Structure formats: C-alpha cells, structure tokens
Image 1 (cartoon, rainbow, N blue to C red):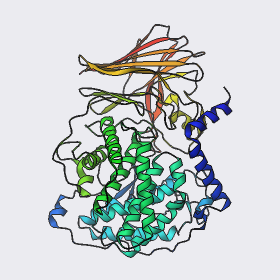
Image 2: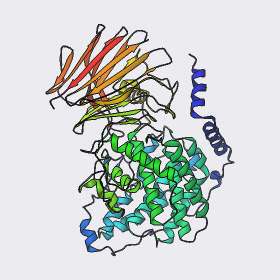
Image 3: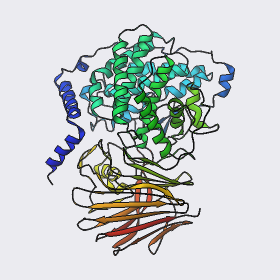
Image 4: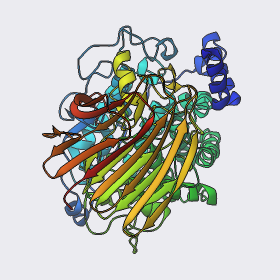
Length: 612
C-alpha cells in the first residue's frame, strides 16, 4: 500500500485542525509574523525568595531529611551544593551548546551540534527548587540562599527569549509550576517578592503566543502550558497585576478543554504512557492545589470527574507494594513534584495526592513516603481509605489490568483515538509481588541512532508477536506511526472461580492478524495467541526479568519460575537471546528474551507458572 496514502490517512486521524494549527505556527515563526518573534523582556534580578525562620519546631520535626542532590531524568544524580551548573551544557558530557545566545527559534530540536536537547533542558526545568525549598522549610537557611543564587545565575545565563532553554513553551511552563509550588512550600504565595512575580510574568509572555501549537499536539504540552498560564496568571492577578487576567482565563479555559478531550471516561490519557500519565496527573494536581490556595472558583464537574478517572487509572496500573508499574508507552524520565525521596518508578506519591484532591480518600493506608508530597503541600489527610485495587478495564485507551492475589497482568490493545508512540499492540506485562517478570523495553532516548529508536519503540521491544520482521505499523517519523491499528476482536473481562480472563485481537494493513486470550489465576498465567495472514514468519517474544534462565525442551526455567510454550504448528526456533530494556531515560541494560518462531499460521500456547 502506498506510503502516500498512509500519510494521508494518518493526517486525517491526527485531525486537520491540529495539523493546520501546527503548520500555521511553524510558518508564522519562520516568516516572523508570530508575535513570539517580537518578544522582549528585562532580566529580573534576585533574590527571588525570602529567607525565613518562621517554621514551627513541630513542623520541622516532621520533615524527613532531604538529600542535597538533584536527579537528571530522575536517575543520574547531581549535587545541589556549590556553584550553579552550566545551564547551556550537557551535564552528562560537559559539551556546551554552540552559539547559545541565538534567538530560541533559530535552534533545532535535533541540531547535531546540540545533541539531545532534552539533556540541555533538564536542569532548567528547576526540579531542584522543590527539594531545596523543602530543606529551607525544615530550617536550612542556606537552602534558600542556594535557590536564589541558582535562579539568579540561570536568568543571567539565559537572557529573555535567547538560547535553547527558551525554545519550548512546556519547559517554560514546568519552571513556572516548580517555583509556584516552592512558594507554597515556603509559605510565600501571599507575599512574594516582586522579582519573583517579574520572573513568572516573563515566562508567561513566552508561553502564551505559542499555546495553540501546544494544543495541536494533543498531549501533555497542552496540559502543562494551560496549567502554567492559570497558575502564573492568577498569581499575578492576586497581587494587582492586571496583565495576568488574560493569562489566567486562557489557562483555565484550556485546562478544562484538555481534561475533557485528552482523558477518557475510564481514565486513559492521550499519550498511552504510564510515565506521561503521571506527568499529566501531577499537573492537574498542581492546578487544583493552586486553585484552593488562592480560593478561586472551582473547576467544572467534568474536569473533576476526568481528573478522578485518571487518578483511578494510575492507581490500578501500579503495584501497591513498591509503586512501580508497566514501562508501557513513551518514557522520557519526566517527574514533577519532586518532594519525596522515593525512586522515580514509585508512582504512589502522585496517586496519594491525586486521591486526596479528587476523591477525598487515601489511596494507601498507613504512614509512608507516598504521603510526603501531600503533607508537604498542606493537603489534609482524608479520613477514608480507598478499597484495594482489583481488575480494571480502560477501553477508552486499550488497557486491561487483570489481578489475582499478588499477581497482575496488563494487556495493551489498540484503541487509538490519538497517535500511538510505540508499536506495542497486544503487549503483555506481568508482575508478582511488585516484581516485573515479563517486561516492556521502555524508550531509552528520543535522539539516538535509528537502530535504537526502532528497537525500543518498535514491535521487537514488546511481549507480542512480530510478523515478517516488520513493525505492526509503519514508522513515518521519529514520533509518528501510520496505519493505526484497530481492535477487531474483544473478549470481555471476566472473573470467576478464582480466574480472571480477557482477550483482544487486531488485523493490520498487510493482512496479518493476531488474537490473544489471557487467563490469570493464583499460580499461573496462560496466554493463547492465534496468528494468521503473515508471509514468511512470525516471532513471539517473551522479555524476561534478568536471571539465570535455562532452556529445558520447550520450557525456560529460573528456579521456581517456568515458562512453557507449545504450538499446533512446528516451531522453527525456540531460543533465548539477549535483548535490551530502559527503565530510566538514557539508560539501557541487557535482559534475556525468549523468541519462538513459526512459519505457518496457527496457535501458540504459553504458560508462566510460579510457586504461589
């Protein structure tokens, strides 16, 4: 089928209004008619936060120790002690951005001289402000001095609207949200320094002219920029700065719009990603926190219902033992609201905060680090605790979660209202007691060799069947697949006699079809794959947890864990290979992958057993 027809169909799926907004934005910037090209601003000078010793001793004693480090992509550690970093260099390699004081619109996202621009942006998101603010609230006055010194150095190194750190409206939005939450932590929302309000206004001037482009993306760019406009604009208004009125109204309007459009009734978010779902949910939490803090009018009933649905989606997706969840969808290491000393992959702090705000209930009982963000931001502890999670179907995004005692299976199936970022149809994730036993490859990097871009985002990086060495959908660009799959078969989620089952299937544009039925009980996971329509071969992959796996006939064994695969057609190959996974952005590690190859249509039956 012609790639041109594929592009046309994909464009229609993306939506002509969105494509029109994006094209008009790019053309208007290139031609110089977009007002963002004419922005001017004066560098605000610090200090931005007051040093305060007004914290009560009772409050100080409740604050746990806060490490003096910031984590790049929530994984690579950098000390916050000492001189400010080089804001215009790669903190992992030290390589500086060439000619950094260019107007931001002259710098490409994928400029070979810059490399992965996300690495340049990372420290300028100001994630480090919140841990330092928490230290300051605990009585460390040097922490406030460090915030002021680093912010002052940042604006000196990044004069208004010049250089890579002004390039992205979402990056500017994350900075606004971080300093606003720091003001809550330090109790300085009602009495901020003028320099801080000037700093916020400067950022809103950058965000507002390009907000239509953010909305055209149908992703977290829109939620982030809307939240920043609402938070920053209303902050300015509360201190008599009337320029904030339009920004605040614009932000509220788009927040309501994005919640209604991008979050389904069952809670799925447009990006089909656990990590980006958390980014979105943290953003909604910050907007609601801010609204309450300034006693502003409530958001609509629909906004709250969609926020609650998104909260329940994430609560059902992650494991209550350690807060980890499937590495499904794009994962760029983003983590907002860094107010707790938990691992990046622990999603419980977000769930606990969102449950308190949108459900007036605790997601998790008892004392634990999952409560740190809620407590630090002054959200009262709800009196009720939500019931334990069970099996869950979010058909609005194509996610089925099956639970049986301590075991959880998650099946990903195609329900693409929005663009898919990975070719992961019928991927299966499997967990027991918080341990990920059948795994998704993750993302690794957005700016890497085509080999890795295709591997991590492609079909080979998932626990599913690959036909004829190709992806399930053709890749049209770095972030876009064509010929979006549609579910052609669905078996309902059933729970009976101690078993949970679910099934789904699809047929692709090349005529290949895959139907998968899964059944989970307290001792085994059974998967039946019916495949047909391929030309020469089909490969079923099971991406295993690292361990001493050994082949034994048509089984692989690792202690009490056994995975057996049978088929009603001859097996061409049954082999343990070495694959890759990325649990954190820019990190990749090896793991064993079981590959089963057949060259005829048929049915493959896999059974994973463990000692209960």
